[in-house]
Length: 569
Ligand code: NOJ
Image (cartoon, rainbow, N blue to C red; front, side, top):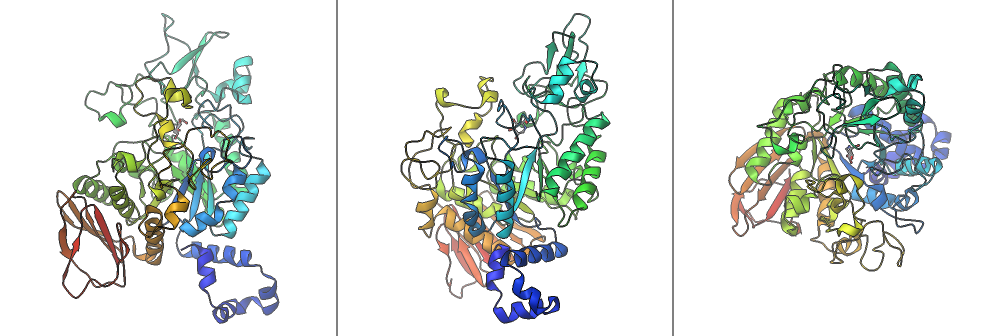
C-alpha cells in the first residue's frame, strides 16, 4: 500500500484529530501533497522507508516513449506514476539518466550533473521526482563512479594535457619492458583492460570498454568530485543511488596481476581470473562510510544500494559495515541460485545468518544485465513464474522488481541485426545477450504496445503479442500482475513483522516458511499436489487462483503443482 493509499484511508475526523496540533488555518491550506510528504517523513522516523519494502527498477529507455523516437523517456515514465503507485512500490531506480555517448547505454557518463537529452531535461527529472513524491514513490538514480565515458571532459583533458591535474583522475601506467600492458587484468570483453595512449606512450585502465576509462579513486580530488555529485542530486530531492560496480572502484595501488581462478564458480570469475587486485579492494569501505554520512545528513535519509557483484556472503555483509556503510547491497548469489526449494532456502538462510541484524537483505530476480527470472528460473512457465514472484515478495528485507517482472515478462530473442548492446556484441561468446532483457515494456496488445505510437519503431523489438501485457493482465484475476499487486499489499500490511524468518520444511519439491505474519507454502512439483498444515489466517492468496476463500476446518490443505499459497495471520 502506498502512502497515498494510506492517506485516502484516513477518515476526515481522524485526519483533523491528527492535525489539531498544527492549527486549523494550516490544516486548511496544507495541500494533499504536503500531507503525503509529512506522512512519509513520519514513517521514516519509525523505520527506513525501504525496509521490507519493494523497489522497482525502470530501464528508462524501454519504459514509455512519449516523443516518437522509439526510446523511452522521462515524460513517458511520468504517465505511469499512477501505475507504479497502484502497484504499491515504495520507490523506483532509474537506469542511468546522465548525458552519455551510449557506448554502454548510459553506463559511460559524460556529465554527472545533467540529464541525457534522449530522456528529456533536468526540469523533466525534477518534475518526475516531484510527481512521484506526491504519490509516495521515491526516486533513485544510477551512479557510475567506477569509470566515466572517454568523452567526459576530465578524460579529454587527461589525454590532451598529460601534465593537467585531470591525468591523475584516471589510472595511467607505463607498459612492461617489452611494451605489453602493465598487468594481466582483463576488461569486460576479455581483452586486456589497458589501452595504449599513443601520444604519451602510457596505458590507461578500463575494466569495461576502452571508451569507459576507470577513475583513480586513490585521488582525493576524484573523491571530492563525487561528494559534490551526491549532494547535487540529493539537494534536488533524489532519494538515493544504486551504485554501479560498488565492489570494484578501488584498484590495487601496486597494480598486481590477478590470480588465475581454477576452481571458481563461473559466475564470479572473470575470464579465468579472480579479480583480487583489479576490483574488490578494502579501501571502498572507508569511502562508503563517508558517503553514508552524507546520505544520513538528509531528511528523510537517502538510500545507498550497491551493485555488489561478489561471490560470498561474508564479503557481501561487509558492505553494510556496522550499519554505517551501504544501506543495501545486491545479493547476486541469490540471483544466480537454482530455482528449487533446497537451493533457495539455503541461500536465503545463509544470507540471513551472515548479514548483521541491522542489515536489510536484498532479493531480486532480474535486471538489465542478466536473463529475466521468468525465463532463467521458470523456463517461460507462467505458473512457475508466479511461484517465483510469490517467494520474492514474501522474503524479509527489500525486494527489487525489474520492469516487467510483475507481468512475467520473459527474455526476448533479439535477432543479431537488431541487437543494440555494444558490450555483448563485442563478445561473441557472451554469457548473455543483454538486449534480451531490455526490450520495451508491453503496456497493451497491438502496434506500439502502448510503449510508443503505432508506426514508431522501438529501439529494441517487442516480444510476442501474447497477452503478457499490462492491460490484458489488469483484467485477469489470476494474472501475474494481479498477483504482484496482491502480494505487495499483503507484504505492506504486515511490513513491521517481516524481519522474523523461519524455514519450516524443505524437501525436493516443497518449501514452507514463515516470514513475520506471513506463512508461505510453495510447491515446485510439475504435477504432484501436497498437503500442508493449514494455519489460522485472515487472508490468503494463491499464485494460481488469486484470493483464497475459506479452506474448511481441516488442519491440512492441498497445494497444487506449481502453486504457492501465502497466508496472513
Ligand atoms: C554494471 C551495469 O549494470 C552494466 O550494465 C554496465 O555495463 C557495467 N556495470 C559497467 O558500468
